[in-house]
Length: 236
Image 1 (cartoon, helix red, strand yellow):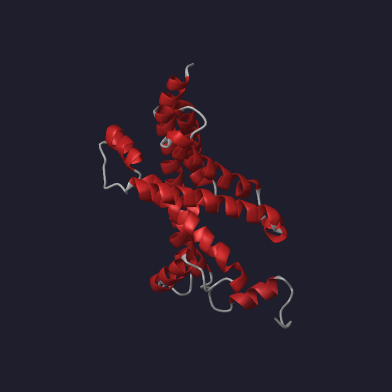
Image 2 (spheres, rainbow, N blue to C red):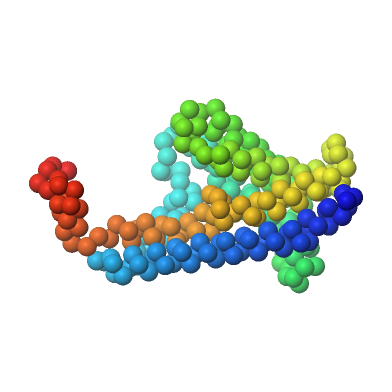
């Protein structure tokens, strides 16, 4: 099959499949978290919904500069910048909006191409920095899974191929081949979102609410747990 046909397939049927997997997968996660949330509220002694606490904690975790040691604040800033870029650029890039308009008739204001270029390069640089830190630091290596290494590289590949496709002067490959890599890696990112850490971009407020309610235990819960473990009367 010629590259042009492969490219049309990745932009058409494969993109629609990837989008469906992402949407249905995220709906599944929201429903499961909602069921868990309802169960926690039902069994919680304190029925008050700590919305204000959750909102504050969510904002603090979105920008967690005061929650990390001073030695880690640079890479915290890098991580926040990386996440902002990989969310904003795909949504507000003019070329992507045109695809939505052609496919579903949806449209919204696009960001300036120059700003998109700078944010794309920044996403590539910060993604590589985060990957390098994960590989080079013993603590992060010991806590990392396969997806922690692969996700930044797949995202960087998506952004780098997209940048090269719209800047032929610096593109060592042809447009169609570069766009094929961009479309394939972008579709892969969409498919991976519900099954990886990328889902936390949507589910962070819900997960904080579940965590907060999970600590609202019934009276004497600690004593009952100690009794069940045969540790009653022992110092905490």
